[in-house]
Length: 87
Image 1 (spheres, rainbow, N blue to C red):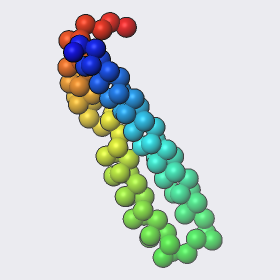
Image 2 (image 1 turned 180 degrees about the horizontal axis):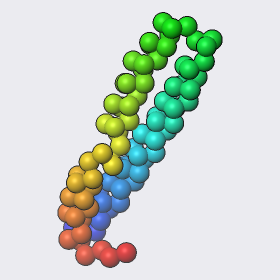
Image 3 (image 1 turned 90 degrees about the vertical axis):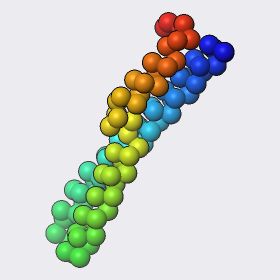
């Protein structure tokens, strides 16, 4: 049973890493979108729409990013520590 908890911890770690990467990709996209929207060629109506999109992206990235709740990561890995696995 201890090995099963270790595998759960590995899967959770991989999931956290993937979500962290996705959140950072969204943030990079938001930065690029923000820079593009600063162009004078972008009409003001579209700039206002970009503000709404950027707000959504920021909230979604924070939702995905496991680093916004480090206590959750610690508690999940602490539970797996009882498996006896030591890297």
